[in-house]
Amino acid sequence: MPEVLKAPLVVEFPFTRSLGPVQSAFLTGLRERVVLGVKTADGRTLVPPVEYDPVTAEDLSELVEVAPTGTVTTWAWNHEPRRGQPLDTPFAWVLVQLDGADTALLHALDTPGPDAVRTGMRVRVRWAAVRTGAITDIACFEPYDGDRPETAGHDGRFEDMVTGIVAPARLDYVYSPGRAQSAYINSLSSRRTVGERCPSCRKVYVPPRGACPTCGVATSEQVEVGPSGTVTTYCIVNIKARNLDIEVPYVYGHIALDGADLALHGRIGGIPYDQVRMGLRVEPVWTEGGRYPDHYRPTGEPDAEYDSYKELL
Image (cartoon, rainbow, N blue to C red; front, side):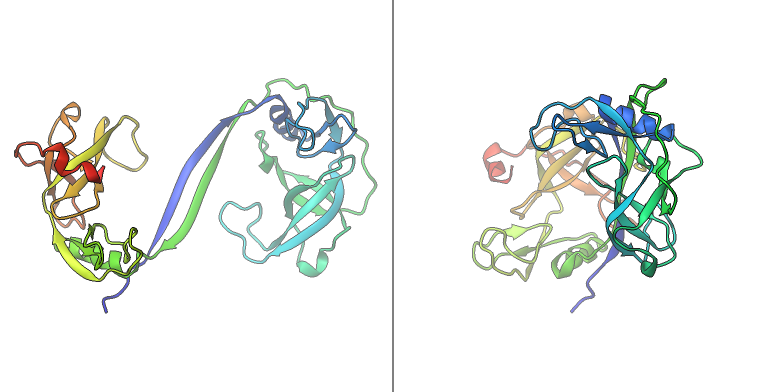
């Protein structure tokens, strides 16, 4: 049996969002070393503040200052911090009910070990040295045995309010394509495209999935398809992707290779983007040393009839 492939993969993108008046005041307050909550009609103070009461769904807008000290309500030990977490040494994730609040805030507690953490322990905010108007302005919490500090009763109005944030999202994982797709990837290295045929419905799936999604039975019979195919549908890309050296606009399409019953996707080149069309006949273009087709280009054949690919849309 051939070796099953695996490779580390990263999915990463910046998530940009605007802030309403409540979240804007909360994050601006953190920048100024002020922790704000929001008051509900029944007198509860919610920290972090939300724009709508989770019980009644009514709008909330009355901001009140709470103390930067509080009590741990529950915790879990993080023995191996990951990229982007608040601390790079082992720490505790804690829910802290700040003095003056009725709900708890999730953050990190800097403490030497799990034996030093307990529910009910007193903690305080450790502010970041450089603050920009983000939850990371609270660097972490730390143990505290002093008195509750007085608050100034801030109303949430500041100069130069924070109105938006950019939160980087990243997922690191190891992907293993499995037996069927490992064979498919290995075949591409010899410039061949190999799918698998369902023993029941006889459809050929490319890329193969190891099982027929319609019949639910395992597939193992390998079938070489292509190399030419038909564009079944497509989209024009107008936004340049990070780390992808392709000038916009360009076209990505679904391509049904000859002999396949499932369309795969690929970039379509060798033709102006506004001349790509459904039914266009294309063939793969390989670069020297490439492990998969760089793109597909027109073969010069007449367009395929719609009836020949309508089931593959």
